[in-house]
Image 1 (tube, helix red, strand yellow):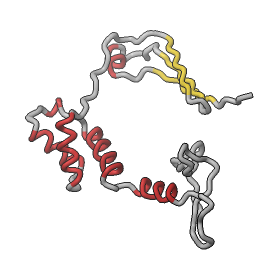
Image 2 (cartoon, rainbow, N blue to C red):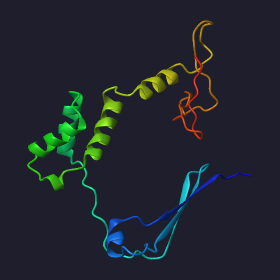
Image 3 (cartoon, helix red, strand yellow):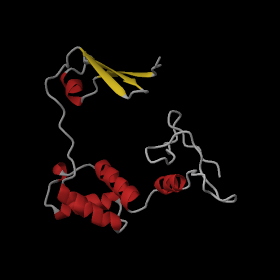
Image 4 (cartoon, one colour):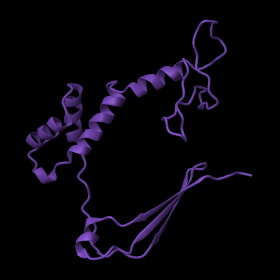
Length: 170
């Protein structure tokens, strides 16, 4: 018998279009998500209708030429605000057609962490995975032992949450 651990989340409308059209009341739209933590299956339910037919504008994303410029500047350790200002000057776009500072910040942080070695978490998790127990270690050599292994037989490194723990003893 397989036991399921469900995470249920109730959602209500928070879009600006509904808030602007009917400021005196709440939107009647409601949503519910139910996620099985074991099988990682998500079910979504909706009830009611939105107060406004207008949908909020989509967020502006970084295009491929913008990403090339951001990668070059991130390699030179420039800050996300300076990178965004360089995108504004270099691409002849208006202030409204440029991605937000938060979008540039997310892209730069991910690029630095994944490609430039700007994250201690990745370095440490790689170290733990390399030191996995194989049975061929010498008596004084350190190793990592865990119950969770990936397909290659190396230890699985968690994210540090209760559901996905990250415990290492040296």
